Length: 516
Image (cartoon, rainbow, N blue to C red; front, side, top):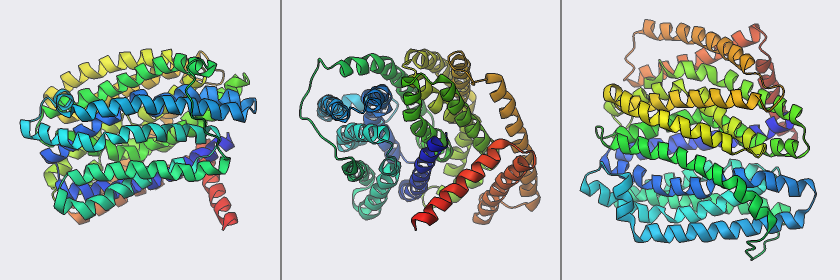
């Protein structure tokens, strides 16, 4: 498990750099465009290649092929491993290239579907932006295969840097071209960023001396194995993308800026639930190998350790983001055209998203545990039920809460999904105990609530205006103090994860010093 946490740490550090640069990206973009119809057009245009990639490639194909890769590597059959990887890559690039060309030829009808609530001018802008960002679909498919191969070989450095280079591409392009090209500079920057993501993977891949085969073998047995796993996983991905489309489409009928507010709130939340993504990526190859050797007891322990660590780390953020959403958003984004009204809209969404933070992060690990067990049907069924729940809750809650209702709906449906997946996984694996998770969650939330209450009272006593720079700085500083108080209380009550987290951090620092 220490090895898994080491890989997860590498991924988390890389993702943290990516999220930090992502904040800079959001500052640069939001200062240039605020919450305007042009920026809403960009977000909706970006949904199209993102959704298609997530369904056809993205995490879908990674989850489907990782157990197959693990079997070949477990037999030390490197040549066939590279051949299978080559066949899958060639097929994926062929499919995504065809879809890319089709959408680029007919952008307006596509935008009419996903941006139905937009005015005609905004739809026209979105269609033009869609042509610019669609090539990222083909590049992202290539990136997905590179990431899957590298993760299977326990190489995580270049994959961990993907968000950093993406954001650098967007930041540099917007700074240079926004005065001349407006919102089109963001789309061009996104295209450049994805190209950079692909380029850095080849640098680390060269260390493995890869062998590429220019062939497509539709009869290869590995293709059938991947196809059987791919179909339900792709269906689950479609469900997830339907949720995104529903959220964006419903938000287009709300006041201007609602789409952007939801996007920015989710981006800020991503700073924290990326821990679940990191653990999911780090643990998945190991879980697949444990299944290949039928070591389900170790797999259960690995899943339990991962989920408890997520709960322990994210509990204080869940509680602190609620009272401190406004100063956090204001300090990060509150400049230029991103005015007090934009901060307030985004803070409302972030407060509601925070309710489901732990559940969102847990789902990343839980789904990969099922995929490692070659069970992609269970996550699909649960995903379908929670999708229907999400749509109904969207409609009900947005009537009174507007865009914040959409965010609350996402949180509630994620909580339901995480609870159900945990209960079902406990039936398949030893050492996975839902009652233990519930008790541990209650303990962590109690400590986090007490810490949050203390610093929230201190913030109110200062009597500063949260809309000012001083108020925002004080608010974020007190929120950080709340996190420190929580960690101190965890040490005092001897919560094992507090010591594990400290040892993991110290070990990472020692390795860096040894390399230096």
